[in-house]
Image (cartoon, rainbow, N blue to C red):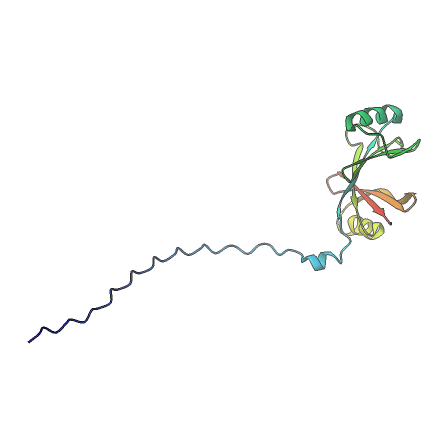
Length: 159
């Protein structure tokens, strides 16, 4: 009698190695959603840095050479250099701020200067330095000191 063929048993599959479980991450602190932030009067981007200078002609010569360009705006009350989409401004009015340390102000672009001014000075503890005012054409600026004394410039350009 012929031997019965043993049924071939399928080979057991190798057990897949279990992947180590990822550590559970702590939930991040709640962030303001972009849609919600768009409703608040906020700082948008750095637009200008303005240096106080007590000798405008000397300052223009220095920065024209340092930047290898002439100012695009050149008046006795202000000179402005365009630098890769930003502005370096030279302001000879030293009645409120003096040249030297603390004499430069970075100006943040804002959509509504009065709303941002009010929020910074009433809600967030900023101190008024220079009230919002028109500086020519469609441009308004203001300065607030943050709670640490740093100067925060605001600039609104309606164009």
